[in-house]
Image (cartoon, rainbow over all chains, first blue to last red; front, top):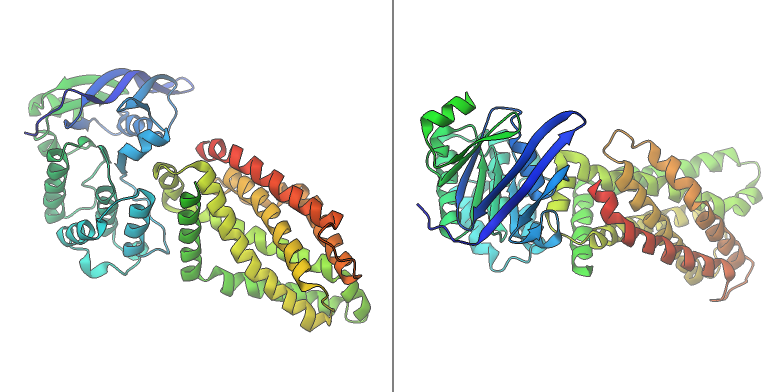
Length: 229
Length: 220
């Protein structure tokens, strides 16, 4: 279990999102301290992705607020702190894996990233594909590429949406290990997942159902399975 | 901001170099336009020379429109537009980066069209430096307008609106650029040429509007 700092790294106050009459996320007030590993669970359509998109600033809330280390979500300062690994990898069709890595590192002003890149590529078995186009990769390899790009840049908060989609068992194992390294390094993790085995290994679980928070506490597999299934 | 702009521009140019849209689509497209006009006005060779400034800008504008659509379809693919936002770049940097990439691609296309006009239409070229200067400022103005509208419409099943939005707004730029060219052909060469001055004003005005508005457009 990673040590958890006192400082609130991610804080929502009355955060809500609705589309006309449909409440995608009901008012939500939570505080996630630095270094905490949080699993966000819930069925399809429960509001997980809406919550994540609000946190990373890709959606504007209907009400309430989100702050990342005191900075409003979506601001340049907040975006520089948050790394987001989507379930739909964001990749350019005509840039090679190496070019993607270089672009991300230069955009974020990462220092000494070459060694880190070699390490991540090796762990995720992408070293031999460094000069290839991710657009020609399989779903799993594209997801691994997204993981490399999400972990290579500097961040304080790592947000991951359905991280295990398309990954083979070894890839999942490596990714869980890399997530653990990030948490041990002091980063805050928020991971939306259906994988209850993974949810059982985190510090805290948030469960959503129909846009409402129905569970917030240490992981308890029996309680969570009621929410997810 | 300028570092962000350079990173965005170099990314777009790198993608362009690999996808070869410029060499495989834009240049052949402009060549076809020039050849069609050459055949159409074949019996009036003097008319071709007279019309060459206008033909140059018509062909250039069509090519730039395709380049603009391509530039933003890159961001629409695989939700890269979201990625562009999440990189934490200054919106002004993204805007300027897109403009720089479009200007560089357009300059290559315009050079190609210029050679085409000289060779196919036997149009005389005078005051090449001033011609290049007016073409450069006009291209900046058109690119600024195109990048703003491109961000508004591309990737939302409204791509075909791009020419409809751009053409009326850049019409004064095209008029000024064509008139400047005619002035140079007539030997009226001066840095104080009113049409060149107007092009500079357009470039600065459209650039300022883009820098100020691009962030909110991109976030929409």
